[in-house]
Image (cartoon, rainbow, N blue to C red):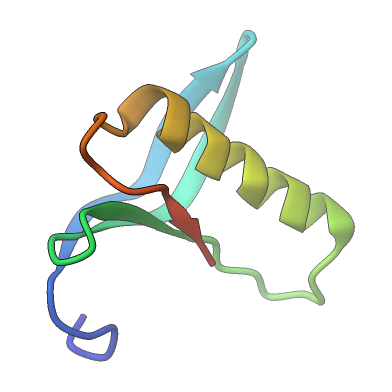
Length: 78
């Protein structure tokens, strides 16, 4: 975690989220205390596809709508 920089806190690994009757699993979720935002990291072992980018965006949107508090900044996905 020191590689990420200062202020990062580990939140979850394989965080399950439930959307429209389906379960999805976010690889890694961190919270940056300095930026006051969630940071979502998806780990892929293959070439990134448009589907992967859409999936990450879905996770970012979920965290922005459901998990983020009003004083926090927008979620970052990587």
